[in-house]
Image (cartoon, rainbow, N blue to C red; front, side, top):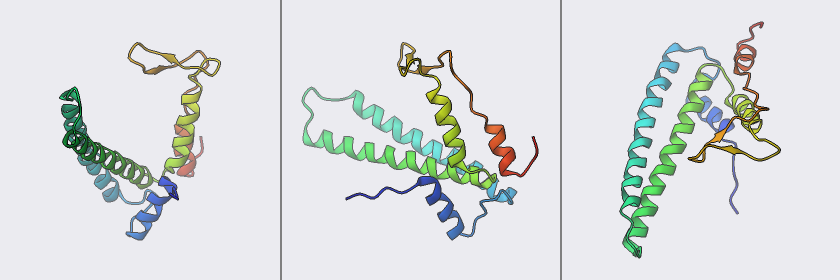
Length: 150
């Protein structure tokens, strides 16, 4: 049985275990995370490019070698995507902001895009903002995290 963990809490635990601040106290740490966002983003982009190139060359009847390559490339994309989540989590914590609170606000905002429980889709499949869309109040989350008055 697989046990899932909370990625935001895991990120906090990792940062604390490695002597990092989660309170936004270090400009150097924040600068490091800014650089890591670019680095990890480039690695994800490279992995996506490799996967896309492979899937565009799909044979009519995929053989074992094709499937093995597809699994390997998909695994690389998945790993790099999670590395991006880890780094973005660290970047927000380096600002003193709890990423779980931002996630919740954005999720609730995304759900407000629905019209009678159904998405309004653009031609390419992107979910568009419906008439009841409410943007997330991220400013409040940041101000609360920093103990600032509104």
